[in-house]
Length: 374
Image (tube, rainbow, N blue to C red; front, side, top):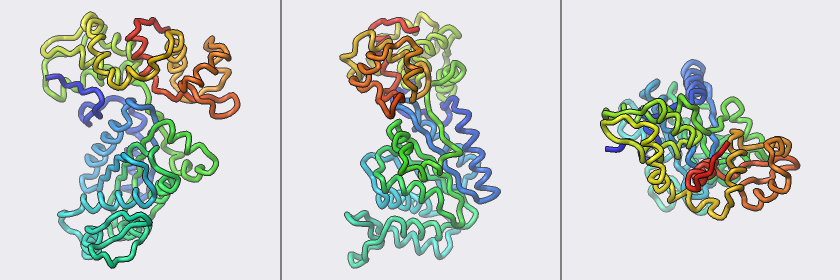
């Protein structure tokens, strides 16, 4: 049995690191418990960095602290408006509450009404009758909050939030600032595109909602990489493990990028044995196959020097860099333009650039081509 499943979110018992996010979650739950105060947390990062794993861990931490909490996860798969987002949240709240003991008359009435909730082209309808007039997602959301028992906690997790349109982004502010009998903890995850949109002047009121809890989800540190390798074996109660030199090699090859850590772990693991560095080195071709369905096509036409420069910029560890910072890495100005044309970098303002492609792409191609990185 191989406990490593690349591309799948880590389960709460195999989760590693992200201590700052978890501390903020505990603070938010304490504020909800003591003061009935709402909180909002924003997770941004590249594909494969583990954002969904963080969401699932936050959900588990919340339920461990408050088993009676209402935990809603909305994984966006299509472009979504305010009505679609709020209707989805309300539907999931209703699903979570159906069958719970102790529901008051107001809540029971609301649950019966939203049983027939559907999203129309110009709004949403509530109730089974086709004669019911369309209403707005905002109206149904407010009715939902007013129906919930006083003193509870509602955790709303929105994944892949870059798929929200402008009205959907506005709905995040609505959720975070709604006051009622329950305290709301809103957790939103999205790619760097979401962070870009929230940095625009017209979305600054939405961005301020997350001012106390914004986190870039990036590479794992060496201790976090060790935990990411060891936790799945413990959780599955398997024999075997990792030598210190094997852990160090996995971190060096992957730079701690979660998806590539999992690819190397999956390819290297042998049940009942201790994986050493030689085993990791020999497993690299298999790891490349495991990760290739996504990564092989990315930057396939880039030169070896492009990959080296890409990795050098990625190693800075921040999505946004000034041109002076890039030049200080020994990268000449014309080469910056080349990376922009290849859509590895994006110029976001004068003298400001953003790394648009996931760093793991550079690390993957460096392994595939046998390139030595600094």
